[in-house]
Image (cartoon, rainbow, N blue to C red; front, side):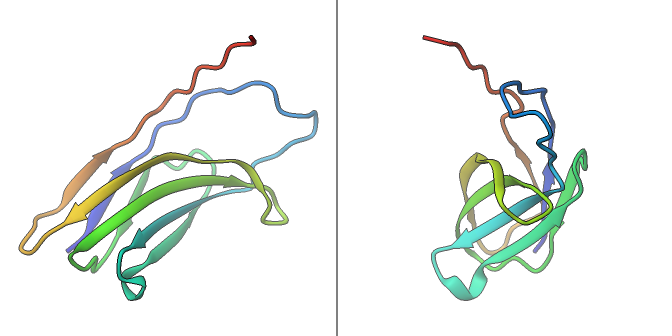
Length: 103
């Protein structure tokens, strides 16, 4: 079965000058490691599909990376997803906003 995700973005301040997000790493980490899947998104990409996802319980995350592959922000929008057989295509609704305040 396929997993379809809809991704939204929000501006987030506080990064050092010159910081650039080059890619977004998406991960489906399964209870059974043979079922793990990953993908790379371009910044601003709003949809993602994982094909042939096996029945399992998955931890889902997105991590912003710089051009060297270092984590700039994240993992964020993390959650769990349980895929059961038979299942139809699902849509993930992930958080689109993080609010920070200075204490």
